[in-house]
Amino acid sequence: MTSSAAGPTWRQMTPEQQKRLQEEFKILLVRTYAGALSQANDVTMTVKPLRASPDDKEVLVRAEVQGRGDPVQLDYRLEKTPGEGSGWKIYNLNIMGVWLVETYRSQFVQEINAKGVDGLIATLADRNKSNAKKV
Image (cartoon, rainbow, N blue to C red; front, side, top):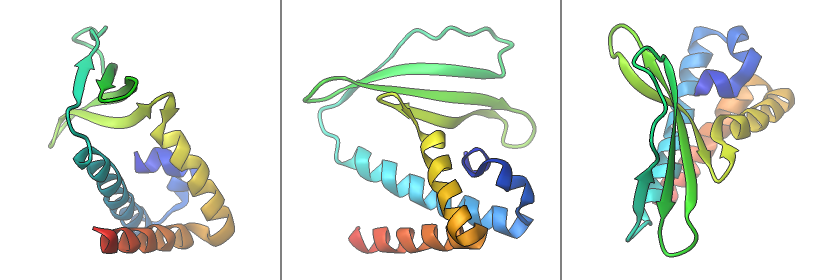
């Protein structure tokens, strides 16, 4: 997710910058989505039938989350990864028609253009520190 969100700039980053950006982005995503899910009560999730073949390397899983209000569309893209730690891994989420990676990509590009890669990492780190205080 991180390399996709960073776009072409990812290939220009140093390995240390890539590692730091991955760490901060992961913290942000886990806190954001774990926090949202912890607030959900009496929710059901219906996974729609999967259209895939055993040879597929990527699949789209469509689901619907039903709570108190209208149902919420939740789709996620998975890729099958080889080697150590292999298996199916989510690399993008679509919540109500908005793909997570594309949303963050536009934010990352703006931040990189304004402050550079290290500025983006610092902004994410500051946001994570601020979010940690709220917990």
